[in-house]
Image (cartoon, rainbow, N blue to C red):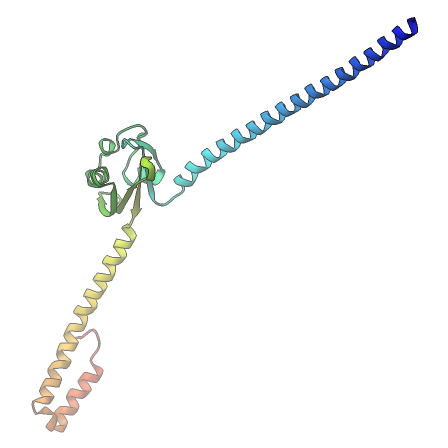
Length: 216
């Protein structure tokens, strides 16, 4: 009888130890899953931090000035180019966009954005030094999430256009005198001078060697 009891106790103890090992294994698996979840959460947090740090860096490296506004027209973000264009040194975040702008040229695009929700190619001249010609574009973001304002520096483009216009005007002025002289010679020839070989030859030689600059 005692043998049966001992065998029963031994079997029960074996079962207990087996379940205990399985229970410890389950606890170890759960602990491992928790560690893995914590590791994944930490990796996700670090990736979000890197992404959040990367986005402002991208905006700050842009040549265009960028400002992001919330649905109420308050400043959420401005990049370095935007602040440099408008000579802004303080932090505008949380401030009303229209009220925070000190340059009068920005009041019109800001007011147009508020009333119409869209600004396309509005020109703004910034007093120097250096003098800048900016083109403002703005639009409301979908879903009433706010607005995006972009300033393009067209100073160099405007300077090139002005240089081109001056060049064309100078060339036109320089060509006007020799063309007028040639026209006068042709009209003289048409009115009878062509019948005089010596005079006609002299006029033709003058037309041939006349410098483009039109020296008198």
